[in-house]
Length: 135
Length: 135
Image (cartoon, rainbow over all chains, first blue to last red; front, top):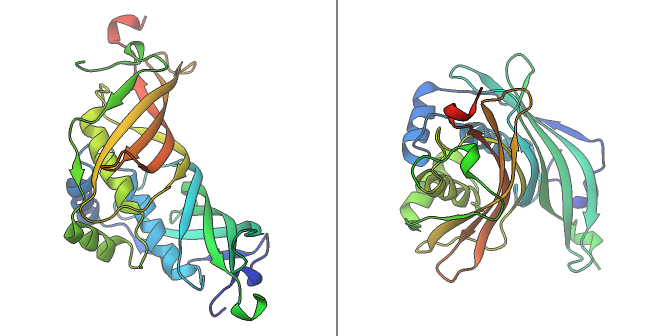
């Protein structure tokens, strides 16, 4: 798929990252030292997910989140883990206020190399309508 | 308050960060370049919040999140903004399975220098019972 617009998205559609991110101990440590100076570091899986999402979801204007629900970390991420992301479209809602855009609700699952979820969330993303569809 | 245990927390209790974080353009850029290579950068407010939380919440074992709900960014964060965090205890639930711990549900609001919320969420945190309270 080239650039995806709101009109191209339907519930049940799944996007899977081609790239896989190998979690690097030094990277975790650098991240932890600068942003989260304590022994438990859950944020890195959120960041790896964001990076993979940007490469995976072909939304016309990029991955613009308006909110996240039910963010959970069912398993820890360890150095050496290889992560990938799966996104399933749950719902597509055109905006009543702004005819040129709408909201896509997606279930986003970050999986490790054993296909075990390490992070799950439901994200609301902004998507734009195909210019030719907008009156 | 010294170290706070599950037994010390009650609904309605509010913790406010003494420290305020000034958002630095270079810091945003560095963060964005490494972790989120696209024009919209919402994550930094989550990170600043985490940093302030670690300094603010006196939980005995640190800020250990088991999940986040209703994460929203009502306003953008701009370079030069000064952020602080307010946390209100919503609910305290001892674990049935593990008598030594429980869950604290907190509403976390990150405010800018004009007292406008730039990020809101409800977080479930792990808290431990006072050792002398555990049979």
